[in-house]
Image 1 (cartoon, rainbow, N blue to C red):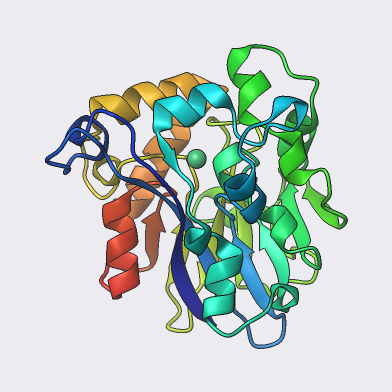
Image 2 (tube, helix red, strand yellow):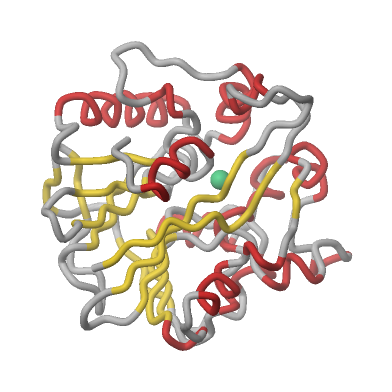
Length: 284
Ligand SMILES: [Zn+2]
């Protein structure tokens, strides 16, 4: 299996290094790190989709609003057609129909925007995430984070309960419908109740865990003491559905990233430095 690391969306919130820990100017750069996996017998598999063509074409607009206005402003979202997953799939010489499966870590607006650009794909998600995203929604964040217009045209869902076999101390859902056993969902509730990571076994036997929004900053992994910028600390708190499970799962991931560094690489959805490392083929 060949794994491509794509950036399918860029956010530039005011705050610079207070968010991303590295920008010299007033604006930070955050990415939407998605995976495109070329499998031997199961077509192309996407992990998360970032923003999609319809977000780029029509981000606003009444009831069909695809991106939540307060977040468009807060994150200073840059919508670029060339960054959409579909355009990057095409740039690699494939067509939308070649993407047979999409596994989503969760259905927030910055992860689900490209789902409808792949009408032939089966979409895999935790049942709890689907239920919460479908609504009804209570509270300011819940009313904005999930955008029905981004996923109401999806025809083929596969939804999963939280129980499964063990994977490095986590419960993992194996046997995703139609996918090889090298691709697993690893429930990591906290950011949302139905949030999950996606583990992919590479040809060299090592695992890559796409941890979605289980953490946001590279300094939160691979070191005994968590380090996170103030901007991303605050953002994680704003967006969490449950603080205790978020912090517990994050600590478990941190321990895994240290104790099993030779076996498991962990990357989150929004850190630009992690993405650059992955794209360059450097170890995290
Ligand atoms: Zn996100």
